[in-house]
Amino acid sequence: DTGVSQDPRHKITKRGQNVTFRCDPISEHNRLYWYRQTLGQGPEFLTYFQNEAQLEKSRLLSDRFSAERPKGSFSTLEIQRTEQGDSAMYLCASSSKGQAEQYFGPGTRLTVT
Amino acid sequence: QKEVEQNSGPLSVPEGAIASLNCTYSDRGSQSFFWYRQYSGKSPELIMFIYSNGDKEDGRFTAQLNKASQYVSLLIRDSQPSDSATYLCAASLLAGGTSYGKLTFGQGTILTVHP
Image 1 (cartoon, chains in turn brown, orange):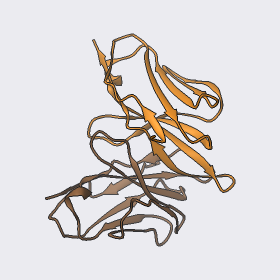
Image 2: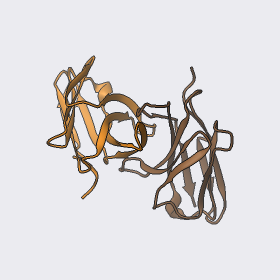
Image 3: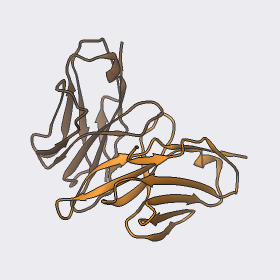
Image 4: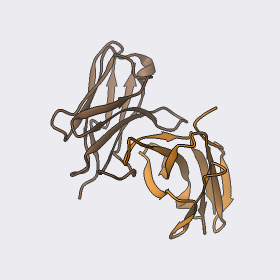
């Protein structure tokens, strides 16, 4: 059984560019979560999906951020018009139905120059 | 007040000692509690979870939960230098019946185990 995978692992982009990250959850996990983590802080919730439905979005998530999970399997997180403040580790996690435990992928480290 | 609070440390213990990590939470609706270990530059790794009041043991790790005091702790016995990492406490609400949602994390406690 493979774990959660994320791609790319690192991304350097210039301010104003759009970026897209991909997450593949553990197979059979129906819930998928996105978090963001900056240095010295715990992960901060962004949004989550149950199957293909997006059930919750953080109030902190600006309209430059959008996430999809079109077939209930992998998910993408897009950031439009990136800003330096978007520099962070973007973490994806998944969990199975009826369970609270979430398992994280390796993360995508975004640097906006 | 932060929803989940931890002492950021650093906490330094000698090899072989017991490391005690603490966490408090503000939302009484929180149902499930988790401890993640995070090495520098890596993603969080789930090491313990607890749902009921009392203690839960797994190898060298013991998680303790006191819902009346809104307090969670993690004890690491026989600490090893490889336990040196940031330990994140997280809480989850039971939303809409039986489904669980997001995790709310504390800022993490840095643990250093010195030989």
